[in-house]
Image (cartoon, rainbow over all chains, first blue to last red; front, side, top):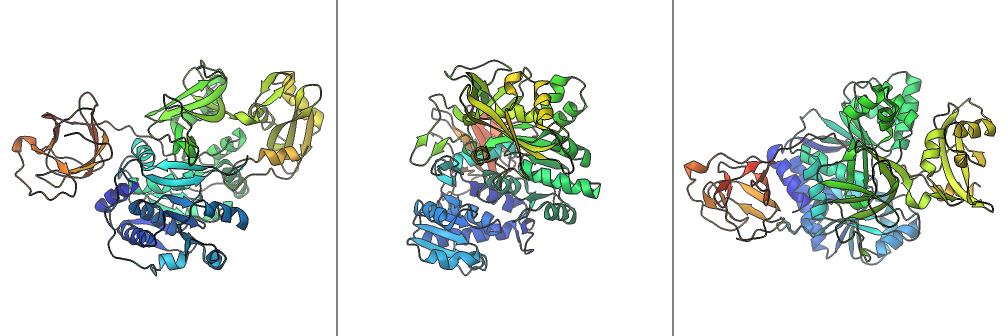
Length: 498
Length: 101
């Protein structure tokens, strides 16, 4: 089992199709070119004596060539977050030496100083100045070979290196994607960075389906919209913060004007309901899919599909309508269970920790081991519940739960209520130290432009819709909440505001 | 032979190649076009296809036995049909999923 096999199959059926286009410089590769360049990259990386293949760069053609080339060479592919500080980058690199490392051109000199790193600039790598020993040996089919190492964002402590083996990646693709199912006209707009699991799986699923990928290395809503129109994009994945910005810009323009966009999927964070509802109006013919997944599960484990979005949006039954906030039902081959603190499985509509099991689930960190239990279940540390129809709802990270006077409160449900207020554009709820209750509730609010509101109004808004224990005792206002580039809310930073 | 998950096998009578997704625990006989399959890359002289076993295998399709003890992915197409201990394998139904990445 090897992800190279996916590319080999695509190359055997449509060698002349364009596989990837980098929108920044217009460069492209066909499937055949991608296959051949991966082979050359594999022999060069192997020849360098390295035992990892790193990429420290925004997305470019070097990303798919590196991903497949490293699989061919039998080396773990390690994309590094280029937004980290030089010191953080150096620390991560020291954990994967000796490494064959492709970097953005301007970084070459800084990194040449560090030992045991074979540094190549992206242009050297793509211009094939790479020394090649000719055709690479056949790739290994061992399902346990490590395909990808992804460093977690490390919001608490040192980043962990999540291990994804060939069997996890291949199982995910075979379970989720039909081979050669895309027509030549189909094109995916990919703006997830290489170091995000969605950036990796976007490459694999596009290749296996035969869909052309248009890479957008530096996301702005304007660039995304222009590119979607000019490249006649048919499918795209965005994180919620990206969709919120796209919706804002399109709102000003009046219409999306993208009839070619057949499907738009999102994930990687909680989608505010008002943003989704606006987006569904702006893209009336587009299929919406909400995907839930983690790095440790080789990305998507559950989806709320297009028909379910439409059915929920049109329903007059509140229980069904609420389903718009759900992340759907598990993919085939994936099981999901909700458990309490003692590890006992819970029934429908009961809140607890989300556990996941399936062939694509790794749950392993380098130096720590697999965190799955004896039956293969992985604890996600996400809180959630499953409704009586089997739909999964997320309630935030287990670590974010606010314990107020012995009662467990989920920030997510309070945020869901506050964001429905017409003055509120975005909101984060966190726990703050409280002498009487142990923890109290604080809300950091971003207002819609031109709107004003009093604390009292917002408190009453919550009191009218939830139990009084959910009412924030402190409300502060800010221009924007702190998010990572991939749409994760930095709650620790929000807490500092109080 | 004992099949191994992830291993690649080739037909000895046509161009078909498969990868093992799920392997049965016990020794089995896996054939294509009426002749036993061999490890991919092994140097075997191509034999004649058995005319009773030429339904063909399609690239990208998955094949299973009746009890789902064995699952294969076809990675190169061919004219022969796949069989486990003499019983022809079935095409596994694929369900169309919404695009999620």
